[in-house]
Image (tube, rainbow, N blue to C red; front, side, top):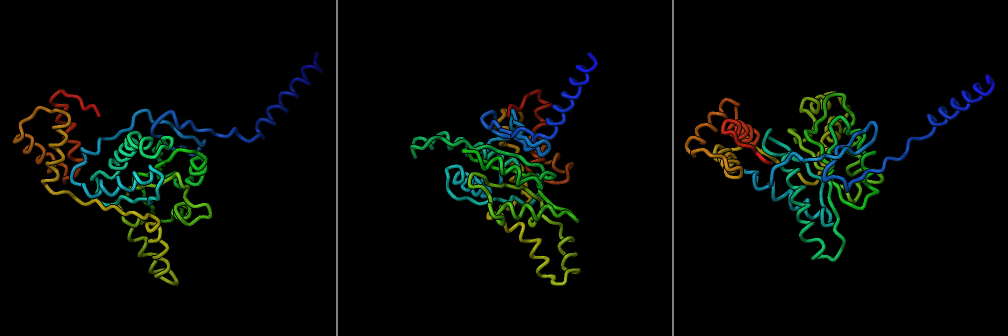
Length: 298
């Protein structure tokens, strides 16, 4: 009996050791399960998003030119034509990330309505993949999974920027345009940032002052944003733009308030927030809806 127990124990230990040595099972994403996913690097997986936090394109006021540029680029990509990586940069709270999410929905609707009828080809879905800033270094692994798929993907990084001693921007440069494989044909990369060149100015100036060849050092930093073929700038809104945003929300959600009172309250709200932006307008609308006892079904 002791011999049998010993043999059984040895066998179990051997099996466990082999299991630990064996490579993990390949991750097979199910991109049919949702419209959007969040890339998780450890362990590698795509986490489905049950409900995307987004607004319709028509509610994004004061950025008409930016909307047109990104929609045109995205629809071309969705329909199988060449398109550029896009960097949405500029003023805080002016709808950069909201625009990416809204344009994804618009592109999907465009495919649903026109792809089959116009081309006779099978409909190709487009998925939104969010990658967090701290996972940018694992972007090559993320793209390796997407490259194998038949559908198209917008890989989106919100609030992308790099600080001192952060060298992950070099791998991002290679992935976007410079590597041997390059960006997969079925993937496009969109990023938002408050910085046009994604790096703090003092970091670039420090490189200029300490480098043997200052101009080459600065070019190394600036060339990251050059990997984005489409730059879309966002600027602080005027009072008229701000009021147009507020009124668009009120009309869309059917909020019951007199226009003069709405104007006075929303302007006072912007003063207390220290500025006007789409984000401030949305925060006022949430406060207003709460006070009115109404829901915001977005």
